[in-house]
Every structure is written in C-alpha cells, then in structure tokens.
Image (cartoon, rainbow, N blue to C red; front, side):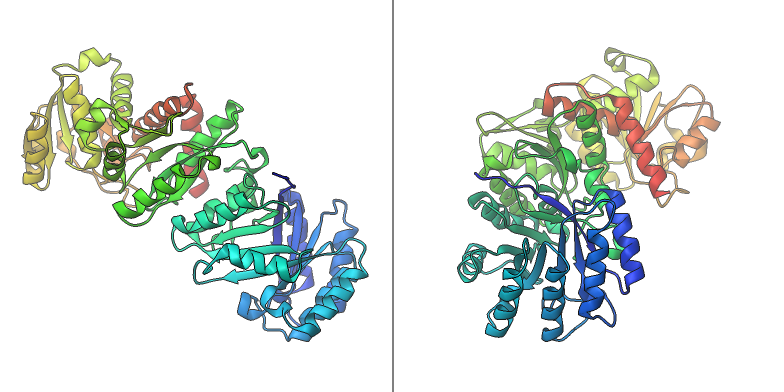
Length: 525
C-alpha cells in the first residue's frame, strides 16, 4: 500500500484575528504539523482578512501546511456566511499561499462554484482541494459509494469523509475504507464512540487527523486536545506496525488504564498503544465489537482489559468461541483480561484477585502461604468482592462476608464456603484483615466510610480497594487506630502489572504505574 504522511492538524477557531493569532502560536508551540483556519468562526469575515492571516502563517518562524475552511452552516459551519463570500475566501486563501482549501462536496456540484474553485486552483502552484462530506447524525448510507462519488467528480481532490459514530462499532466501516484505499484521503468519526478513529488515523494512513489547542476551541464532537494525543496516546510513535491494546468499559473516560499502560510501553520503547474503548450496551454489542476486531487482523489488536459492565460477557465470549479460560477466572465467573493468541483464539484471565493478593501480602509483609487460615472480613458482595473472596478462598484464608443485603452475601458465601453476616454485625468482627470491596468512600464522597471507627483495632491490617482518593477516610481512621493500611492503588497497579505481563511477556515497573496514577490525581485536583 502506498503510504503518505499523516498530518496532525490543529483547527484555529477564533472569532477575531487577535484570538486566531494566539491560537496559531499555541498550536505551533504544541507541535501542530498543519493548521486548519476555520474562517467561518471569524466575525465580520472578508477575503482580505483571510489573505492577511494566511500571509502571517506563511511567514511564521515555523511555517506549516495550511488548510483554509469556510464551512457551510448546514455542514457544521459556525456562522452562516453566504456562498459567494465563502468561495471568495477560499480562492483568496489560495492566492495568499494556502496549500489546501476545504469545500463541501454537496456544494461542489454547482457549476459556478466548480468554475471559480478550479480556476483558482489552476493558478496556484501548490494548492489542493479537499472535498468534504459530513454526517452529524450517524453513518453514511454507504461510505465506500460516497468515497467513489467524490473521486469521480474530482479525481485530483482529497476526499474527506467524517461521520458520527453513535457506537464504537460504527467506526469499523471507516477503518475498512482506509484499509481498502490508498493515497491521500481523510476518514474520521465524531463523538465519544469515534475517539479511537482520531488516534488510529496515523496507523491507518489517513492524510490528516485533527486535535484542538484546548477544549474550548474544539471544532467537532470528540476532538482530542493535542497535548493528550501527543502525550497520553503517544501519537509521535504510532506507525502502521503499532500493536493495539485497550480497556473495554462503559463508562471509560475516567479510566487510568491508558495512562499507566502507555507510560510503561514508552519506558520499554515498545511499539504498542493502549486505547480507551467505550463499548456501550449489553452482551450483543460487546460480542459484536470483539467480532469486528477479530475479523480485522490488520488493525493489530493483541489484548484488552475488561471492566464494568462487561466482565461476565467477556467470559461467555471466550467460552463460546472455544478459547481458554484461566481456572480461577472460571470460578470467579468473570474475566478482566483478554489476550488474542497467534492463532486468533482468545484467552481469558482474571488479574483482579492476583492484584489483590499481591497488595495484601506486600502490605502485611507476608507470603501467600501465610494467608492460609488468616481471618478476613470482606465488606461487600459485588464483583470486586467476588474476585477477592475467590482468591482468598483458593489459598485457604478464613473469610467472612459482610453485606448490606444479607441474602446476597449468603449466596456468595455459599459458593466459596465462607461465613456471612449483615453490616450491623461489623462491630463484632474478629479479623486480622479487613477489606472494603464497596465503593463507599470513593471520590467525590470522601467523607464516607464502610466500617464504624470502633471496628478498627491495633494489630489489624485494613485494605481499601477504592483507589481515588489514595487515602480514604477508612484508611485515615485505620492509621489513627494503629492498624496497617493497604491502599487501593496497590491493587489497581498490581492487577495492571499482571495484565502487562500477559500482554507483553515482560514485567512492567510498578513504580511507574503508581507515579502515573498519582500524577493523574494531581492534575484533576
């Protein structure tokens, strides 16, 4: 396949020239490889105004290629300028030295528009036309047919097809078009469901991808900030051979998994990238996503982290396809890690219990063998509790489950031969280790605790699986009672280290992951 450079373009969407110049300076400083002047945002627009702005970009210290756009409001433009002014702006931009102008395919059918633009292009030494089509509601009826129509009407143009992905599964038609074609073309998906298309544009050889200077200057739904794209998602290191991983979740925006895995890929100089994969819906949509991935080996996906609400669906999918499931993952009834083997079969694992046991043994200064017979109070009977109870039971710990709904605790206890009680019995507990497996105390409800202060005693170890904040109220009160404390970041990092080993065959540095988590908390604060 003929490969071309993928430009990282930053849209300049300002209401006046002064703001536009500020955005241009910020974009260039952030590493923009191309600028898009969205002149439809400028108030009191004139062709001469745009010529002057193009001239300033061309004489800047770091000149970059320039796309000039004056978008029709029906196709997402900001201000509804008349057609003749928009065409004059584009032809003027070419005369001033712009390398590209972007015009709507549906408006190019007008003979008058075509003649003006073709004349201006013929008089430009390097000017090129981008013919764009947008669908803000959903997918194109037939994106391949739309692409061919554009190429037929103007073979020398760069086709740009942008549509809203109402679900991540909508992205695959765009991926297929990029895979099946070559040369200069732009294919992107808008919305949260289309986030991955903006990151993978470089891997799939789209001519341009777009990222804004900041959130306020974004020109399309789901557009990333350039700092995120280049930092968190390692844009500069992406190429056609980059192997892909990701976290499948709903919601996924809060996940720290991309940050910690990408940090470790970078530290080891691995050509790998970890993505947030928002898979909305139930088992059918989850299954369809995995089928879409497995049918497209050329995408390069090699493994996934799986979290709420898809862990049970992941287990079922692996089993239905004849894949391998780790023994304890089967017993837990949930998979949080998927690895695509060389023969395209899936392997399912659960690293939650391993991460928890490693956090416990490290925090208490004991070995896994010493967990046998240890009295443990587990607060909660949900998915996290299930994984931890399974792991503790497997090593012979003496577990008692405390849950608000006693019947639910009783059912979990019956599966793993444990004792159970209601939360009102917590003051009577006699345990060497207390584990909070609920979300009580999680940000923003930081003034809540799952266990009465009087339950906490010297000589105990208290483990809170909540990792935001790093020190919950439960852990603060445990310290005051002279109990040992184990924070949730330890479990989160340990399970991620185990995943990293399954993904890559090498061990990640836990200290890098922990540092990344703490830095993320600091930025949000």
